[in-house]
Length: 106
Image 1 (cartoon, rainbow, N blue to C red):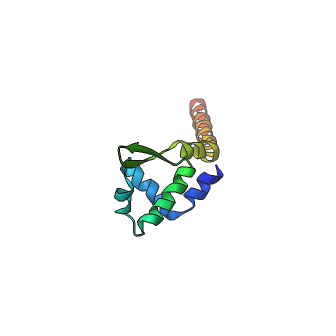
Image 2: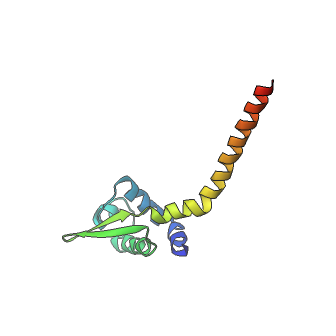
Image 3: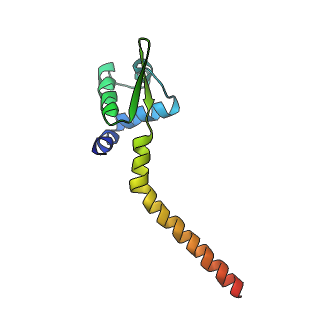
């Protein structure tokens, strides 16, 4: 999980993930068209994303295609966001139930 947070901490890597979200399965050249840095710099960022398991690579002939892997982000959601969201939904359900009971008594 530490590698995921480190990878997500960088704005450029988040931008690359956004590009893959919009159009999954892009080559390095396609990704570089949207970036204002050298091909080597983009490659370094992609390698860090691969190490964090946020990007998966599939070779098709001579082309290396990059795909967004949403699993680590889903794990972050379940561990860090989902548990807080669940309490809010439970509180809203309890409020609704209490209000309905109060309305029935009147």
